[in-house]
Length: 192
Image (tube, helix red, strand yellow):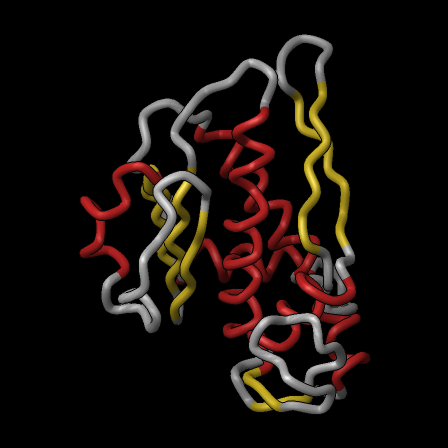
């Protein structure tokens, strides 16, 4: 499904490219072109909606059915919500020639995109956490859904990231950090 942008000022092509690269890199399972297949599956089956963070409550109908959506959301900081085959990505809808906003908007969207990717690929069977850094974990060995455990262990604990450079004008490139835990690595780490 195409990405549904409800924003007015951001460069849609850049956000599409970043999401695509994140899914391709993290979708690698050790087989030839597995990342590309993961992206094709993601693009075909996952509904992605990008909304402005300031007007998030105008778009509540898009995410009110997702678990945990009854909580208050920031109207300043970017955030995201992931459901089965669905990604809601709230961004600062501002264009900045120095790229500050894109660097702030990308991590929450990629984090939630990985939840959706892992739900589709490894499922939600329960596995053990490897770190105690995620806020929902009280002790090592606590169990949780695979799609949450893998992403949160990396996001809060291991903090493995991939630096990606995007073109921002004629000879200007911006570094972006995206979470990086390919499926192949996750399967080895968690015995799934």
